[in-house]
Length: 252
Image 1 (spheres, rainbow, N blue to C red):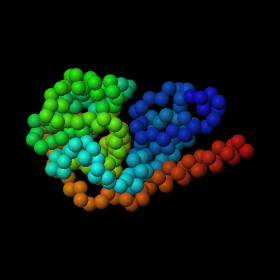
Image 2 (image 1 turned 120 degrees about the vertical axis):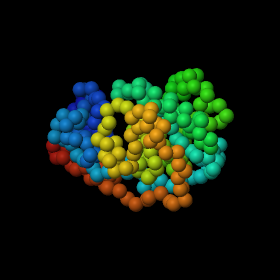
Image 3 (image 1 turned 135 degrees about the vertical axis):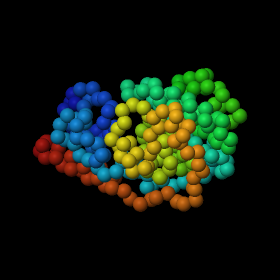
Image 4 (image 1 turned 180 degrees about the horizontal axis):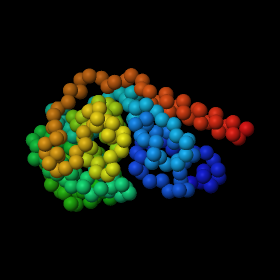
């Protein structure tokens, strides 16, 4: 907003075309995945550049696993570890159906022997609300909430599967090749639709699918993560450099 008032060019890097941006906060430039359509972008201009892949490809190849996280969270190798991210209930795109799916999912986890859930609330208010409304989730140590921030990629890597009502964590799991299920019930973005088509993400759209579509299977964690460079980082850096050159010529 301040940059627009001061006429300073701005660049927005985003990957969800259904988020809303107030008029005064619209960027001059956008850098988006190539799976996004040209319509519905926030800049309302031709200043759009696209990159290959997903934004999580920028940093996923640099990930190095650290097994000490299991000890920190009190988890065991023999546990079937499920990372669960609740929906963003305060977001403008939230659909209450996601909360219904989350409840049914946690009920299934709690009645499945040998499973451990690592629950990652979005803030303290959400944590307190979930603890108050669902004390059964936390009985007998089935569900744990980290007491401090943990390395998200490392947690995902040591999970057997990931279930989230959001976007970034789902796509991080997809970037690492980890089975991931989305209980997000807002408008499906083009990135998620592409990942679903490629078999890298599974959309869960009903309570019946919570029971029948989500596979509680152990994952082979012995192979190292894929550290090969990906196109997204190169494309984004090239676009930023190009934009800087364009804006500098205009100023000159």
